[in-house]
Length: 474
View 1 (cartoon, rainbow, N blue to C red):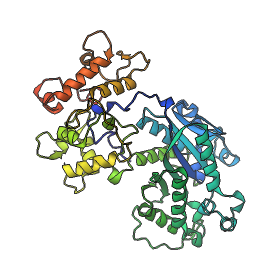
View 2 (view 1 turned 90 degrees about the vertical axis):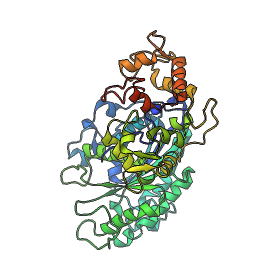
View 3 (view 1 turned 45 degrees about the vertical axis):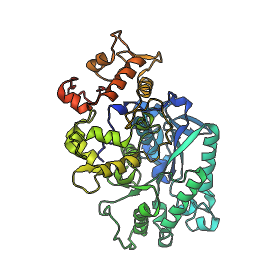
View 4 (view 1 turned 60 degrees about the vertical axis):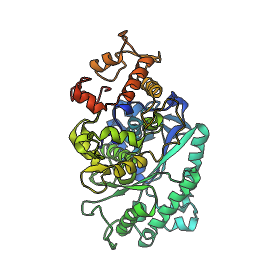
Protein backbone atom coordinates (compact mmCIF):
# COMPACT_ATOMS: atom_id res chain seq x y z
CA UNK A 1 0.00 0.00 0.00
CA UNK A 2 1.41 3.34 -1.01
CA UNK A 3 1.98 5.72 1.85
CA UNK A 4 0.50 9.16 1.57
CA UNK A 5 2.25 12.35 2.76
CA UNK A 6 2.15 12.73 6.49
CA UNK A 7 0.61 16.26 6.55
CA UNK A 8 -1.42 16.82 3.37
CA UNK A 9 -3.85 19.40 4.75
CA UNK A 10 -1.64 22.02 6.40
CA UNK A 11 1.56 23.86 5.68
CA UNK A 12 4.21 21.29 6.46
CA UNK A 13 6.65 23.88 7.74
CA UNK A 14 4.26 25.07 10.43
CA UNK A 15 3.41 21.51 11.39
CA UNK A 16 6.96 20.66 12.40
CA UNK A 17 5.63 21.38 15.90
CA UNK A 18 3.32 18.84 17.51
CA UNK A 19 1.99 19.83 20.93
CA UNK A 20 -0.01 22.67 22.38
CA UNK A 21 1.70 22.63 25.78
CA UNK A 22 5.14 21.44 26.92
CA UNK A 23 4.02 18.15 28.47
CA UNK A 24 6.40 15.22 28.17
CA UNK A 25 5.11 11.90 26.84
CA UNK A 26 5.71 10.14 30.17
CA UNK A 27 3.39 12.62 31.91
CA UNK A 28 0.49 12.16 29.49
CA UNK A 29 -2.08 9.36 29.18
CA UNK A 30 -0.94 6.42 27.07
CA UNK A 31 -2.61 6.31 23.66
CA UNK A 32 -3.83 2.73 23.97
CA UNK A 33 -5.09 0.29 21.34
CA UNK A 34 -7.15 -2.85 21.93
CA UNK A 35 -6.06 -5.83 19.79
CA UNK A 36 -8.16 -8.98 19.74
CA UNK A 37 -9.05 -11.96 17.58
CA UNK A 38 -7.76 -15.44 16.87
CA UNK A 39 -4.48 -17.12 15.81
CA UNK A 40 -3.09 -14.57 13.36
CA UNK A 41 -3.67 -11.91 16.01
CA UNK A 42 -1.99 -14.19 18.56
CA UNK A 43 0.82 -14.40 16.03
CA UNK A 44 3.21 -16.84 14.43
CA UNK A 45 5.94 -14.31 13.80
CA UNK A 46 9.46 -15.51 14.73
CA UNK A 47 11.16 -13.09 17.15
CA UNK A 48 14.60 -14.31 16.06
CA UNK A 49 14.00 -12.60 12.72
CA UNK A 50 13.35 -9.17 14.20
CA UNK A 51 15.84 -6.35 14.52
CA UNK A 52 17.19 -5.74 18.04
CA UNK A 53 15.12 -2.61 18.57
CA UNK A 54 11.88 -4.53 17.89
CA UNK A 55 12.95 -7.51 19.98
CA UNK A 56 13.87 -5.44 23.03
CA UNK A 57 11.38 -2.57 22.75
CA UNK A 58 11.54 0.87 24.36
CA UNK A 59 9.69 3.07 26.82
CA UNK A 60 7.59 4.83 24.17
CA UNK A 61 5.85 1.69 22.88
CA UNK A 62 4.35 -0.35 25.69
CA UNK A 63 2.23 -3.44 26.22
CA UNK A 64 0.10 -4.43 29.17
CA UNK A 65 1.13 -7.96 30.14
CA UNK A 66 1.38 -9.86 33.41
CA UNK A 67 -0.42 -7.08 35.23
CA UNK A 68 1.87 -4.21 34.29
CA UNK A 69 2.85 -1.82 31.51
CA UNK A 70 6.24 -2.68 30.03
CA UNK A 71 8.12 -2.23 26.73
CA UNK A 72 6.39 -3.92 23.80
CA UNK A 73 8.33 -6.97 22.67
CA UNK A 74 7.75 -10.62 21.72
CA UNK A 75 7.17 -12.48 24.98
CA UNK A 76 5.12 -15.60 24.23
CA UNK A 77 7.43 -18.68 24.05
CA UNK A 78 7.18 -20.58 20.78
CA UNK A 79 4.80 -23.51 21.03
CA UNK A 80 5.67 -27.07 20.07
CA UNK A 81 3.77 -26.61 16.82
CA UNK A 82 5.65 -23.41 16.05
CA UNK A 83 8.99 -25.04 16.80
CA UNK A 84 8.32 -27.51 14.00
CA UNK A 85 8.48 -24.50 11.66
CA UNK A 86 11.88 -23.44 12.99
CA UNK A 87 10.75 -20.93 15.60
CA UNK A 88 13.16 -21.00 18.52
CA UNK A 89 12.39 -17.99 20.71
CA UNK A 90 9.11 -16.12 21.02
CA UNK A 91 6.14 -15.56 18.76
CA UNK A 92 4.56 -12.21 17.91
CA UNK A 93 1.58 -10.83 16.02
CA UNK A 94 0.81 -7.54 14.25
CA UNK A 95 1.22 -5.56 17.47
CA UNK A 96 4.99 -5.15 17.08
CA UNK A 97 4.97 -3.34 13.74
CA UNK A 98 1.69 -1.57 14.50
CA UNK A 99 2.92 -0.13 17.79
CA UNK A 100 6.18 1.15 16.36
CA UNK A 101 4.50 2.62 13.27
CA UNK A 102 2.09 4.53 15.48
CA UNK A 103 5.01 5.80 17.56
CA UNK A 104 6.59 7.17 14.39
CA UNK A 105 3.34 8.85 13.36
CA UNK A 106 2.75 10.32 16.85
CA UNK A 107 6.30 11.18 17.99
CA UNK A 108 5.25 12.95 21.19
CA UNK A 109 3.01 10.15 22.47
CA UNK A 110 3.46 6.92 24.37
CA UNK A 111 1.73 4.09 22.52
CA UNK A 112 0.12 1.24 24.46
CA UNK A 113 -1.01 -2.20 23.29
CA UNK A 114 -3.66 -4.19 25.18
CA UNK A 115 -3.90 -7.53 23.40
CA UNK A 116 -6.12 -10.47 24.21
CA UNK A 117 -6.44 -13.13 21.54
CA UNK A 118 -7.04 -16.89 21.40
CA UNK A 119 -6.44 -19.06 18.36
CA UNK A 120 -9.30 -20.76 16.54
CA UNK A 121 -12.06 -18.86 18.33
CA UNK A 122 -15.46 -18.01 16.90
CA UNK A 123 -17.40 -14.82 17.51
CA UNK A 124 -19.82 -16.98 19.47
CA UNK A 125 -17.12 -17.19 22.16
CA UNK A 126 -16.73 -13.37 22.08
CA UNK A 127 -20.41 -12.45 22.41
CA UNK A 128 -20.99 -9.75 25.06
CA UNK A 129 -24.17 -11.60 26.14
CA UNK A 130 -22.23 -14.86 26.28
CA UNK A 131 -24.05 -18.11 26.92
CA UNK A 132 -22.34 -21.45 27.20
CA UNK A 133 -24.84 -23.09 24.88
CA UNK A 134 -23.95 -20.58 22.14
CA UNK A 135 -20.22 -21.19 22.50
CA UNK A 136 -20.79 -24.94 22.63
CA UNK A 137 -22.13 -24.79 19.08
CA UNK A 138 -18.49 -24.43 18.02
CA UNK A 139 -17.03 -26.47 20.88
CA UNK A 140 -15.73 -23.43 22.82
CA UNK A 141 -17.95 -23.27 25.89
CA UNK A 142 -15.00 -24.32 28.05
CA UNK A 143 -13.26 -21.00 27.31
CA UNK A 144 -15.82 -18.92 29.13
CA UNK A 145 -16.73 -15.40 28.02
CA UNK A 146 -13.84 -13.99 26.00
CA UNK A 147 -15.46 -10.56 25.96
CA UNK A 148 -15.50 -10.56 29.76
CA UNK A 149 -11.85 -11.61 29.90
CA UNK A 150 -10.91 -8.88 27.41
CA UNK A 151 -12.69 -6.19 29.43
CA UNK A 152 -11.13 -7.43 32.66
CA UNK A 153 -7.67 -7.02 31.14
CA UNK A 154 -8.66 -3.58 29.89
CA UNK A 155 -9.79 -2.55 33.38
CA UNK A 156 -6.50 -3.77 34.84
CA UNK A 157 -4.60 -1.72 32.27
CA UNK A 158 -6.65 1.38 33.17
CA UNK A 159 -6.06 0.88 36.88
CA UNK A 160 -2.33 0.46 36.34
CA UNK A 161 -1.78 3.75 34.49
CA UNK A 162 -3.67 6.66 32.97
CA UNK A 163 -4.66 5.66 29.42
CA UNK A 164 -6.81 6.90 26.57
CA UNK A 165 -8.36 4.19 24.38
CA UNK A 166 -8.00 5.38 20.79
CA UNK A 167 -8.55 2.29 18.61
CA UNK A 168 -9.87 -1.28 18.41
CA UNK A 169 -8.13 -3.74 16.05
CA UNK A 170 -9.72 -7.08 15.19
CA UNK A 171 -8.25 -10.00 13.22
CA UNK A 172 -10.53 -13.05 13.15
CA UNK A 173 -12.89 -14.96 10.89
CA UNK A 174 -11.69 -18.49 10.29
CA UNK A 175 -13.37 -19.70 13.47
CA UNK A 176 -16.78 -18.89 11.98
CA UNK A 177 -16.18 -20.28 8.49
CA UNK A 178 -16.74 -23.95 9.32
CA UNK A 179 -20.52 -23.91 9.82
CA UNK A 180 -23.01 -22.10 7.60
CA UNK A 181 -25.48 -21.39 10.42
CA UNK A 182 -22.70 -19.77 12.47
CA UNK A 183 -21.31 -17.81 9.51
CA UNK A 184 -24.74 -16.36 8.75
CA UNK A 185 -24.73 -14.73 12.19
CA UNK A 186 -21.29 -13.18 11.76
CA UNK A 187 -22.30 -9.59 10.96
CA UNK A 188 -24.79 -9.32 13.83
CA UNK A 189 -22.27 -10.81 16.26
CA UNK A 190 -19.53 -8.45 15.09
CA UNK A 191 -21.81 -5.42 15.41
CA UNK A 192 -22.72 -6.53 18.92
CA UNK A 193 -19.07 -6.93 19.95
CA UNK A 194 -18.01 -3.51 18.64
CA UNK A 195 -20.98 -1.79 20.26
CA UNK A 196 -20.18 -3.44 23.60
CA UNK A 197 -16.48 -2.49 23.47
CA UNK A 198 -17.41 1.11 22.67
CA UNK A 199 -19.88 1.18 25.54
CA UNK A 200 -17.41 -0.48 27.90
CA UNK A 201 -14.63 1.96 27.05
CA UNK A 202 -17.01 4.94 26.97
CA UNK A 203 -15.62 5.91 23.57
CA UNK A 204 -18.76 5.99 21.46
CA UNK A 205 -16.94 6.59 18.15
CA UNK A 206 -13.95 4.34 18.88
CA UNK A 207 -12.29 3.59 15.51
CA UNK A 208 -12.70 -0.07 14.59
CA UNK A 209 -10.13 -1.53 12.17
CA UNK A 210 -10.51 -5.16 11.14
CA UNK A 211 -8.82 -7.57 8.79
CA UNK A 212 -10.37 -9.60 5.99
CA UNK A 213 -8.10 -12.30 4.57
CA UNK A 214 -8.57 -12.81 0.82
CA UNK A 215 -7.35 -15.46 -1.58
CA UNK A 216 -6.30 -14.33 -5.04
CA UNK A 217 -9.59 -15.51 -6.55
CA UNK A 218 -11.72 -13.37 -4.20
CA UNK A 219 -12.17 -9.75 -5.38
CA UNK A 220 -12.03 -6.69 -3.15
CA UNK A 221 -15.62 -5.65 -3.88
CA UNK A 222 -18.08 -8.25 -2.60
CA UNK A 223 -21.24 -6.16 -2.87
CA UNK A 224 -22.74 -8.57 -5.40
CA UNK A 225 -21.54 -11.79 -3.77
CA UNK A 226 -24.19 -14.44 -3.19
CA UNK A 227 -22.49 -16.83 -0.72
CA UNK A 228 -22.29 -20.51 -1.58
CA UNK A 229 -21.02 -23.55 0.29
CA UNK A 230 -17.45 -24.39 -0.71
CA UNK A 231 -15.68 -27.73 -0.54
CA UNK A 232 -12.81 -27.81 1.94
CA UNK A 233 -11.85 -26.83 5.46
CA UNK A 234 -13.93 -23.62 5.42
CA UNK A 235 -17.23 -24.40 3.67
CA UNK A 236 -18.94 -21.23 4.99
CA UNK A 237 -16.09 -18.83 4.18
CA UNK A 238 -18.10 -16.75 1.71
CA UNK A 239 -20.71 -15.80 4.32
CA UNK A 240 -18.01 -14.46 6.63
CA UNK A 241 -16.23 -12.56 3.85
CA UNK A 242 -19.51 -11.02 2.75
CA UNK A 243 -20.29 -10.03 6.35
CA UNK A 244 -16.87 -8.42 6.71
CA UNK A 245 -17.43 -6.46 3.51
CA UNK A 246 -20.89 -5.31 4.63
CA UNK A 247 -19.58 -4.32 8.07
CA UNK A 248 -17.96 -1.24 6.53
CA UNK A 249 -21.43 0.28 6.17
CA UNK A 250 -23.10 -1.49 9.06
CA UNK A 251 -20.60 -0.36 11.72
CA UNK A 252 -19.93 3.36 11.99
CA UNK A 253 -16.33 4.57 12.04
CA UNK A 254 -14.98 1.23 10.85
CA UNK A 255 -12.39 0.33 8.21
CA UNK A 256 -11.77 -3.05 6.62
CA UNK A 257 -8.17 -4.08 5.90
CA UNK A 258 -7.99 -6.50 2.98
CA UNK A 259 -5.11 -8.90 3.66
CA UNK A 260 -3.91 -10.37 0.40
CA UNK A 261 -0.53 -11.86 -0.50
CA UNK A 262 0.62 -11.91 3.11
CA UNK A 263 3.63 -14.19 3.54
CA UNK A 264 2.88 -17.38 5.50
CA UNK A 265 4.73 -20.36 6.89
CA UNK A 266 5.01 -23.17 4.31
CA UNK A 267 1.78 -25.16 3.97
CA UNK A 268 0.24 -23.23 6.84
CA UNK A 269 -2.49 -20.62 7.35
CA UNK A 270 -0.41 -18.51 9.75
CA UNK A 271 1.60 -15.41 8.80
CA UNK A 272 5.34 -15.67 9.32
CA UNK A 273 7.57 -12.87 10.64
CA UNK A 274 7.59 -10.88 7.39
CA UNK A 275 3.85 -11.37 7.04
CA UNK A 276 3.10 -10.19 10.57
CA UNK A 277 5.25 -7.09 10.11
CA UNK A 278 3.35 -6.28 6.92
CA UNK A 279 -0.01 -6.78 8.62
CA UNK A 280 0.97 -4.51 11.51
CA UNK A 281 2.19 -1.76 9.21
CA UNK A 282 -0.93 -2.04 7.08
CA UNK A 283 -3.20 -1.77 10.11
CA UNK A 284 -1.31 1.36 11.21
CA UNK A 285 -1.57 2.92 7.79
CA UNK A 286 -5.30 2.25 7.56
CA UNK A 287 -5.85 3.57 11.09
CA UNK A 288 -4.03 6.79 10.25
CA UNK A 289 -6.08 7.10 7.07
CA UNK A 290 -9.37 6.36 8.83
CA UNK A 291 -11.00 9.70 8.12
CA UNK A 292 -13.67 10.11 5.42
CA UNK A 293 -12.34 9.33 1.92
CA UNK A 294 -8.93 8.54 3.36
CA UNK A 295 -8.35 11.92 5.00
CA UNK A 296 -5.42 11.45 7.36
CA UNK A 297 -6.56 12.24 10.90
CA UNK A 298 -4.65 14.89 12.81
CA UNK A 299 -2.24 13.64 15.47
CA UNK A 300 -3.12 14.07 19.15
CA UNK A 301 -2.72 17.69 20.32
CA UNK A 302 -2.33 18.62 16.67
CA UNK A 303 -0.16 21.68 16.02
CA UNK A 304 -2.61 23.29 13.60
CA UNK A 305 -5.15 23.61 16.40
CA UNK A 306 -2.46 24.41 18.96
CA UNK A 307 -1.26 27.39 16.94
CA UNK A 308 -4.73 28.58 16.00
CA UNK A 309 -4.44 27.96 12.26
CA UNK A 310 -7.78 28.01 10.48
CA UNK A 311 -8.85 26.30 7.29
CA UNK A 312 -9.29 29.72 5.67
CA UNK A 313 -5.74 30.78 6.44
CA UNK A 314 -4.18 27.54 5.20
CA UNK A 315 -6.27 27.56 2.02
CA UNK A 316 -5.26 31.13 1.20
CA UNK A 317 -1.60 30.25 1.66
CA UNK A 318 -1.97 27.37 -0.77
CA UNK A 319 -4.04 29.32 -3.30
CA UNK A 320 -1.19 31.19 -4.99
CA UNK A 321 -3.20 33.04 -7.66
CA UNK A 322 -6.18 33.66 -5.38
CA UNK A 323 -8.71 32.10 -7.75
CA UNK A 324 -10.23 30.04 -4.90
CA UNK A 325 -8.94 26.82 -6.43
CA UNK A 326 -5.86 24.90 -5.28
CA UNK A 327 -4.20 22.98 -8.08
CA UNK A 328 -1.69 20.15 -7.77
CA UNK A 329 1.00 22.57 -8.94
CA UNK A 330 0.10 25.06 -6.23
CA UNK A 331 -0.02 22.31 -3.63
CA UNK A 332 3.40 21.05 -4.70
CA UNK A 333 4.85 24.56 -4.26
CA UNK A 334 3.97 24.65 -0.57
CA UNK A 335 6.96 24.35 1.78
CA UNK A 336 7.55 20.79 2.88
CA UNK A 337 5.85 19.08 -0.06
CA UNK A 338 8.52 16.79 -1.45
CA UNK A 339 7.36 16.39 -5.04
CA UNK A 340 4.53 17.05 -7.46
CA UNK A 341 3.62 13.36 -7.42
CA UNK A 342 3.23 13.54 -3.64
CA UNK A 343 1.05 16.63 -4.04
CA UNK A 344 -1.02 14.85 -6.69
CA UNK A 345 -1.65 11.97 -4.32
CA UNK A 346 -2.53 14.35 -1.48
CA UNK A 347 -5.00 16.27 -3.62
CA UNK A 348 -6.50 13.06 -4.98
CA UNK A 349 -7.32 11.85 -1.48
CA UNK A 350 -9.71 14.76 -0.82
CA UNK A 351 -10.80 15.70 -4.35
CA UNK A 352 -14.48 14.70 -4.19
CA UNK A 353 -15.47 15.48 -7.78
CA UNK A 354 -12.28 13.99 -9.24
CA UNK A 355 -11.36 17.02 -11.35
CA UNK A 356 -7.77 17.09 -10.11
CA UNK A 357 -8.00 20.28 -8.04
CA UNK A 358 -9.46 21.46 -4.75
CA UNK A 359 -12.28 23.93 -4.33
CA UNK A 360 -12.69 25.78 -1.05
CA UNK A 361 -15.67 23.56 -0.20
CA UNK A 362 -13.65 20.36 -0.74
CA UNK A 363 -10.72 21.66 1.26
CA UNK A 364 -12.87 22.90 4.13
CA UNK A 365 -14.71 19.55 4.39
CA UNK A 366 -11.41 17.63 4.43
CA UNK A 367 -9.88 20.03 6.96
CA UNK A 368 -12.85 19.56 9.28
CA UNK A 369 -12.70 15.79 8.85
CA UNK A 370 -8.98 15.80 9.62
CA UNK A 371 -9.54 17.68 12.87
CA UNK A 372 -12.86 16.04 13.81
CA UNK A 373 -11.37 14.30 16.85
CA UNK A 374 -9.22 17.20 18.05
CA UNK A 375 -10.04 18.46 21.51
CA UNK A 376 -11.97 21.76 21.55
CA UNK A 377 -9.44 24.54 21.34
CA UNK A 378 -9.23 27.24 23.95
CA UNK A 379 -8.62 30.90 23.09
CA UNK A 380 -4.89 31.37 22.62
CA UNK A 381 -3.30 34.67 23.48
CA UNK A 382 -1.61 36.15 20.45
CA UNK A 383 -3.64 34.42 17.74
CA UNK A 384 -3.95 36.91 14.93
CA UNK A 385 -6.96 37.75 12.74
CA UNK A 386 -7.60 35.29 9.94
CA UNK A 387 -6.16 32.30 11.79
CA UNK A 388 -2.52 33.35 11.32
CA UNK A 389 -1.24 31.42 14.29
CA UNK A 390 0.63 32.12 17.49
CA UNK A 391 4.33 32.97 17.56
CA UNK A 392 4.92 32.00 21.18
CA UNK A 393 3.17 28.67 20.70
CA UNK A 394 5.24 27.95 17.61
CA UNK A 395 8.45 28.57 19.54
CA UNK A 396 7.39 26.44 22.50
CA UNK A 397 6.41 23.39 20.50
CA UNK A 398 9.47 23.67 18.27
CA UNK A 399 11.72 23.62 21.33
CA UNK A 400 9.81 20.68 22.81
CA UNK A 401 10.53 18.59 19.71
CA UNK A 402 14.12 19.68 19.15
CA UNK A 403 15.64 20.38 22.57
CA UNK A 404 16.82 16.85 23.32
CA UNK A 405 18.93 17.62 26.40
CA UNK A 406 16.37 19.95 27.97
CA UNK A 407 18.65 22.98 28.32
CA UNK A 408 16.14 25.36 26.75
CA UNK A 409 17.97 25.85 23.46
CA UNK A 410 18.85 23.88 20.34
CA UNK A 411 22.40 23.35 19.15
CA UNK A 412 23.47 22.19 15.71
CA UNK A 413 23.48 18.49 16.66
CA UNK A 414 19.85 18.69 17.84
CA UNK A 415 18.56 20.60 14.81
CA UNK A 416 16.83 18.40 12.24
CA UNK A 417 17.39 20.63 9.24
CA UNK A 418 20.44 21.69 7.25
CA UNK A 419 23.22 24.18 7.93
CA UNK A 420 21.50 26.98 6.04
CA UNK A 421 18.29 26.63 8.04
CA UNK A 422 20.17 26.54 11.35
CA UNK A 423 22.17 29.66 10.54
CA UNK A 424 19.03 31.48 9.47
CA UNK A 425 17.27 30.70 12.76
CA UNK A 426 20.35 31.45 14.91
CA UNK A 427 19.89 35.20 14.59
CA UNK A 428 22.43 36.24 17.24
CA UNK A 429 25.02 33.76 15.90
CA UNK A 430 25.83 32.29 19.29
CA UNK A 431 25.58 28.71 18.06
CA UNK A 432 22.12 28.06 19.51
CA UNK A 433 18.51 28.51 18.43
CA UNK A 434 16.62 30.09 21.32
CA UNK A 435 12.95 30.71 22.04
CA UNK A 436 12.99 34.46 21.47
CA UNK A 437 14.60 33.99 18.06
CA UNK A 438 11.89 31.58 16.97
CA UNK A 439 9.11 33.77 18.29
CA UNK A 440 10.38 36.86 16.51
CA UNK A 441 10.89 34.97 13.27
CA UNK A 442 7.44 33.41 13.30
CA UNK A 443 5.77 36.70 14.24
CA UNK A 444 7.49 38.59 11.42
CA UNK A 445 6.51 35.95 8.87
CA UNK A 446 2.91 35.79 9.97
CA UNK A 447 2.69 39.58 9.73
CA UNK A 448 4.31 39.59 6.31
CA UNK A 449 1.58 40.21 3.69
CA UNK A 450 3.55 38.07 1.25
CA UNK A 451 2.89 34.36 1.24
CA UNK A 452 5.73 31.92 1.73
CA UNK A 453 5.51 31.06 -1.96
CA UNK A 454 5.79 34.75 -2.95
CA UNK A 455 8.87 35.22 -0.80
CA UNK A 456 10.48 32.11 -2.24
CA UNK A 457 9.78 33.22 -5.78
CA UNK A 458 10.90 36.82 -5.24
CA UNK A 459 14.18 35.74 -3.67
CA UNK A 460 13.46 37.25 -0.25
CA UNK A 461 14.70 33.97 1.16
CA UNK A 462 16.79 31.32 -0.51
CA UNK A 463 14.92 28.20 -1.58
CA UNK A 464 16.72 25.11 -0.21
CA UNK A 465 17.75 22.25 -2.50
CA UNK A 466 14.95 19.80 -3.32
CA UNK A 467 16.55 16.97 -1.37
CA UNK A 468 16.64 19.10 1.77
CA UNK A 469 13.49 21.15 1.37
CA UNK A 470 11.48 18.94 3.69
CA UNK A 471 14.16 19.01 6.38
CA UNK A 472 14.52 22.76 6.85
CA UNK A 473 12.13 25.30 8.22
CA UNK A 474 11.24 27.92 5.59
